[in-house]
Length: 372
Image (cartoon, rainbow, N blue to C red; front, side, top):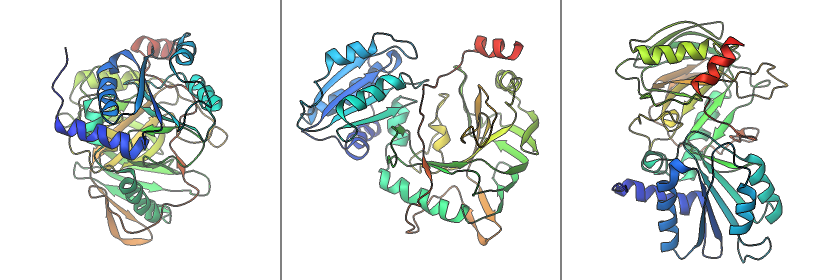
């Protein structure tokens, strides 16, 4: 059954095509979607065809699909036959699959003639929340925040919900990541956009996550936490204890945090997408882009040569808004109001790039990992 599509969704679809894909009349658009995103793919197809853009939609199974490369080869124009670029848009909700297939496709058409953009959290909310602002605006917001944070050696983070965190940075050792909807390196562009993140050298204090969780475990729980915030006591960069009034969310966190290294803080992130004004019940990256702070527990965001542990789980707990007071600047940073201060986006910052498949683990998989 087709649901009614809101004006904000159509605005977001148009912005995706124009501002993020930059697809033109000489280009060829291939939309490759997993089954749960069939309707999402249909919206993009309709909008592209209204622009008279040559478009093909190809279904795929998430994570395991041995025939995908053959289907793509059959459905898509031959390399070198296009007047413009091959633009590939992959749309999934809970996973990001078949990295090697799309890397091979890029190689076949040539990196300068093929653009691959990967959507995770494909949904109506993806368009109506995260696609309303152009990438240039998000890049400016990220640049302003990075300018101030990357000069700090330490910071205090407080939020209206009661979080109070002390953070130490090591910018020489740990890289910052900036997801702004603009691909700067050789990898794929990952959407939704609007975040800066790093690995904190040390973090202590209380996190009160009143916004949402996002975890790479398959769940249909409502991810929103406003009615039952998660309060975590962090000691020496580890979740020492937590409380949550919702028994289902509490069991999910216990399941995750029983895995090796899963209580370790692997990420300190700041959402910067001011277009995200409402939380979604989906377990998704959309809520992570909400202006505010989030702590990622478990798997870290650094090179394995720098931080040598690996964790199967990455659990983000998100707090809305907040203030950051650094040791080099008396004026607090208001996380709830991203701003453009004219700073150029800095060099030496990674774009978010996932160089392999990632997926939502099942609860059964987590139990197997936990029990050895």
